[in-house]
Amino acid sequence: MAENKTDKIIVGIFAAVIIIAVGVFAYYNMYNPSSPSEKENVLLTLSYENEYHNYTLSDLKKIDSFSGNGGYKTSHGYVKGPESYTGVRMTKLLNEIGNLPDSYIVQVIAKDNYSVNYTIDEINGNVTVYDSNGNETGRGGVTMILAYAENGKYDFDDGPLRIAYVDNGSITSSKLWAKWVVEIKVIEI
Image (tube, rainbow, N blue to C red; front, top):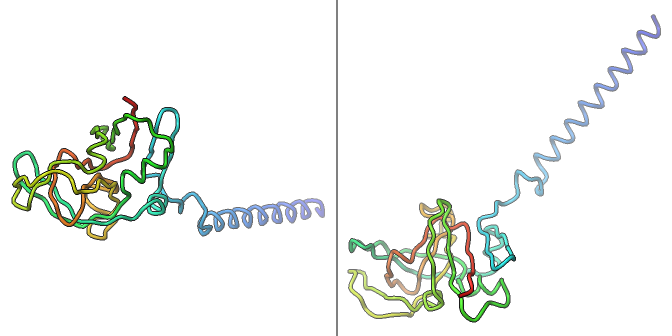
């Protein structure tokens, strides 16, 4: 009988230890800032040849925080914007790769696998510019960015990342404004 009572005490102590261990484990994983549930999601993968770099929103903000106004003209002549955008200048983002080839294009891929290729001229802002009525006013003078905020909001309709061309409010072609960007590839030509 005493042995049976001892067994019950040992089982009770063992059960209590397990319950406490599970509680400590759960508490640590719920409230530890570095727990997986509170880590930032990777928003972008930048690649060149066999080199891959993953970026969270915080990572992108550390690279650059460039703001300007811009909008786009659709193929039907509709003008959207200008809106205020903040993001990483594409030239600064590409510097993350290091030694870029002399001749390349940049392929921007959206989450639905839609892709747009950009030439070095387009990356440097040498694109057709329109006024707010959609009339062509010339070329260049805009900055290509990977926007992570629209009008100060990080959670915008075509985000969390999109290509935008900004300055003081110029309008560019909607064909250049890739949305829902998840990957950027540098391709040597």
